[in-house]
Length: 461
Ligand SMILES: Cc1cc2nc3c(=O)[nH]c(=O)nc-3n(C[C@H](O)[C@H](O)[C@H](O)COP(=O)(O)O)c2cc1C
Image 1 (cartoon, rainbow, N blue to C red):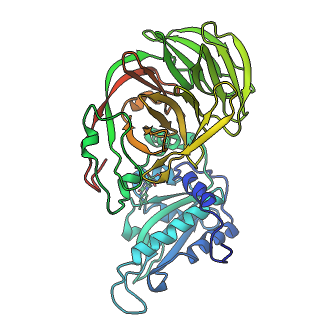
Image 2: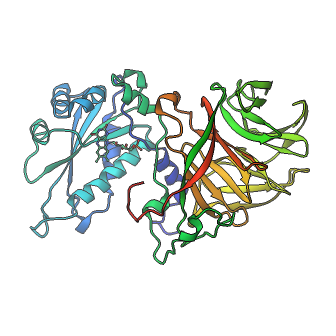
């Protein structure tokens, strides 16, 4: 539509939204120019508000232009927040007036509207390479004084603003660790309810058909897990692909210069054979086909074929787009590309030509970041990058028919690296054993799924 008020596409904005995070580590040496600040507050000007009252005010304490004001604002935030906010270049107090200027009565939307303005500032900051973290932990009276805030304005939230810096500056170990951790989020089905939804209680019981009904309007169950056994795993392996065949694991590891295809002893985790991949490639998903192993690369559009028995290199093949996960059903290779559109692509296992694709949807919403794949009993299991979740996908329709929540599987102390997210699903079809691991994880876990009762809407996860 060529209307001046219609944004171009939702995807560019969505990428900004998804890339946004709340840093605690700031680059104390880098000021935020007045021009940049003006651009930020310009974003707030365009926030929607009830009766268009725009009931907010922002008070800025800039370390570089007014160190005294900055210091007294910092004195208003609580100790834990001070420990990191002391390195921020700018502090901002967001305030709101709770009375309506137009109607002289309580404006129930004053805080809500101010939150919308803050969110636009936050997105604008992200787009400018700035970081912003909000703080509820501060003393309102001290903030009022420091900011010379007069009635009817009330403090809402304090914000630290600046260019993100190195986590090493953070004094608190927990803060340092959380800086690099992936952000966790509820699945959409947790907080959006489509009216007319039928809960498939029957699908929860063991012995339900392998492919459960799903699609828009059908609630998707989430399973937990039980650990049957924890096997050792090479914790330097940046796992990108894992399969179980004839008593051993075959594994693909990623990163440039550390990529490999390997054969691994299940019980001990010992690497029985390791074939390095040329350092110019970042290896990704792995599957087998007809006595071969097939391995993807992330962004090179090239895959490698090895002899499964000897790991001897046989040939390369090409495919379009990015390569993330790889598995196969009886007739086709199935590839994920991690893109926001949520596609699973089907490839001919001999010619590698794409023969079709489905969009993976959770109740109608495309699922981005589909990573390592495994074909299990007619379903495709997919790790969702940077989450603890595995999607169970009906490959015929792309519908997510269930989720597996792996949270808690790796103890926080063992997640030594921000990249150490769950990745790697292997299935032993003969004995129905399901194995999962992660990048740089010390273990491969054999798990069984533990159905959970459907959650009441709005209940905590
Ligand atoms: C109203 C509000 C108050 C917050 N208060 C604090 C706070 O006092 N200290 C802090 O370190 N983070 C605070 N946060 C930051 C949140 O913890 C953070 O945004 C959340 O964990 C999500 O992380 P992400 O923004 O990186 O995705 C606050 C966020 C909001 C929206």
